[in-house]
Length: 100
Image (tube, rainbow, N blue to C red):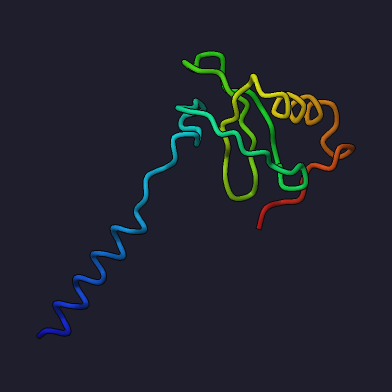
């Protein structure tokens, strides 16, 4: 009986720990709630775009195979990533391979 109770409690704790909410800078419905300042290497970037014009706060969304980052559009590196991606993603070393 003690083993069963321990097992149930362990499952509850593990479920609670893995059910983390989405971070504040992850885009939801195409819009961002906050900004991230992480510089993402181009070789990891699969897509770069601006948030839709209907969003309350504008951001540059940088997508990798694992995550989307909302970057402050006033940061120079984010604008450079966007400009280079629009110009020619393959020429500037972006990751154009399908994500696994």
